[in-house]
Image 1 (tube, rainbow, N blue to C red):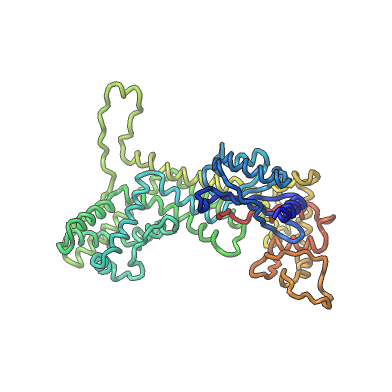
Image 2: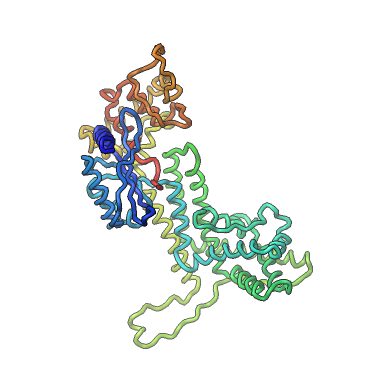
Length: 511
């Protein structure tokens, strides 16, 4: 075991740069064990090796950093050559003052924290639904409604009767903690989308009213139905629901793309930037939200009237068209000097305490998690062959500037101009160079008679989808540079750039 660790350590030293992936979990003895994985690139390709599993006594950001530092020191690895890290989103890891990433960045300037785009966006969307009691109550209400109908066949019969013309969307969505998308689906099932009225809001109100007024149900169930109905009729519920529908309208397409196979880093960053700008655009547009809710209420009332006319029955259902006035508590004399005047306008109170709070948090979270490393990610995306055709007219002046700065740690002679020049020349030659790549990076033919076998070809064993060479990714580019030994002269700086890209953790660690 010791010899194996020494062998791995020597390979990491030879690679020159590495990244760390770590996470903690409790073992059967209820002790926190921290697993540390080192990612590096050598002549045999991308390597990810478990270098240590250590008992974690101090789970603070500084404590975990010291733990990592000791492991690296014991293996003769210099922390300043750690270019990136991948951890979970806990405060002890990501705190800006005492988080693990902050302590690591102090010792290794330029260290990049790699987020899993899809996972973190989903965490952002999940977190913003818990900003206050009012916002959390809406999703608790939606989950309660789904459970209310699902737990009884009699109630489900009432619901099925009201939604008989819409069998496809009959079942309401339960909300689970791990299913982030369930919150969006629960909203859209009932309220529809921002621009459409295809939700089941009216059917829900009618079902609840029927259960409330039916003697076939117990008093307890009828009381629950009444409480659910009154909550769904509140103007505050509609405002909060449509606020989240606006957010999901912007973030949902992005989230779906981030979970697709073959996701392009450049396109992902562009979509993130677009979503961020759209969120900023509505960050203070609470009047637009009110306009949408008022239009929804008008349409809902029209549907109710149509139902009453068709069925010739009366329904005690009145949707609120404004927020109720606030009751003010009289201040004592000594309080007048110590507290600001309370907000007396209910809509202004909603704007300040709920709308602005939620929108600020989602915009801030997007900036923190996605925008910070925007430039380096855009530079790295340029190394993908799918963008080589875009370089026919040259590169914009600042392209690769962030990458050039990162690479100076490993080669002080690197300049932006030379890095750009190497990439442009390599891109123009790619169509000819890629022809020599094998069909598979795993060579199953060990015959000594194969004249085409290249003993000097050092290739990746775990690259490209389904063990097939795509000839259209950064791994293939690096393989060409290694095969022809172009790293020694023609593309020395560019090879270092590809090595940097492949050393970055491919996703956020989730042990």
